[in-house]
Figure 1: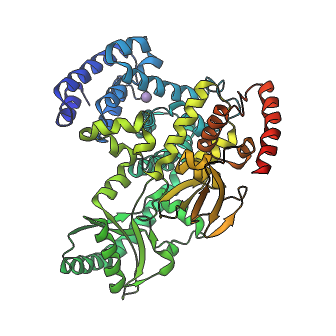
Figure 2: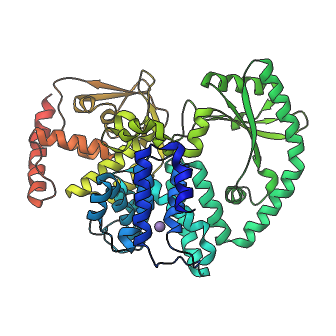
Length: 518
Ligand code: MN
């Protein structure tokens, strides 16, 4: 896309001053990349232009789009971060700096290793580097998408390497952010390079199958549409075809037998309200025979990445197995665009809250991992130690959902203890906890919680945190809160020093004996 085209493309979404700034950024980047070429032989500037176009399409705010234009300048040209800050402000330079750091981590330049020598996991490194602002990851995803789209110009060896990394790092990252469409785009491209022969074979297999079932599915679709209209539920129904990569993964689970894959094509029913979703489910189940084990309520209990929908698989009278996904327009928007959806231009004000400080107040509970990510990033900067396992547990391990007695849902990593829950609900609850009741029975401090537990925290004003509790929490969040409280009480100093550890141990015994009496 040329400068004029990009500006026209962006015009409906941004204000006049923002567009002027964008134009300025395009000029600066064009000059800076002058003479550089992509592998395809084209001028380098086509790449940042494509990235910025994608960011406009994803509805990102102007700072992100401008950072997209400039994302390779600090690394590959004479422009410095200071210059960018002078020209476009702190926000833009911060974003470009984040993207540059990610590239360096990726290139294995070990600049992050000094923060985190024990971590070899690229994904963690990337996330830590950018923990401060999720928009950095979003720029990186747009960058990666364009590189994948132009991968044909690379030598075979590089294609494989980049495709692998995309599958292992970038697709899961998009998934974590709930950006389903981008995840799928990256996966399809990557898989087509990693195993071109199998990709083609599955593509053909899919085409044949779909040819057969599309007509039958059309009949089901009309039937459902009629039933919903009769109940005055306005709706859109469309067919969603399984991606080749997800078919490949599914086939591995069912010993390669495509007859065991029931959702090659699913029908997606999109309605106005959450209530309508459940009504649609009821209507479907009265029309067709549901397969009990395949009903999933991701509306009441969203996936950890925020995805919401009702899923059900039914058997039609003509013995056809059909999967339905039922969701509202809003849920649909989120499932496609994920966190990017919250940066939409006309929500720009509130979107800032997602990236600056006030996260826990704004983010839905199923996105709490972003808050944790930010806490880890802050700690790293302040030089506090972070262990590998902490990172993995918090960010990449499996998650469980537990409930407060009032029915509020909280999302914790697997293996979390009752105190982790208490600190998640409120740090004062953690502070004064003297016992827990889980599903009605007394539950020990050192016994991990399970998915679906209802956890009641028993508190007493006279109870205060103990250093021994440090072994009874597994989340970074709880540990940080607890440490701060202990420090405030004078129970621990800095534990990074050996002297501190010894001091902590002496105190620990003292605190213990004091507690034994209470
Ligand atoms: Mn780039």
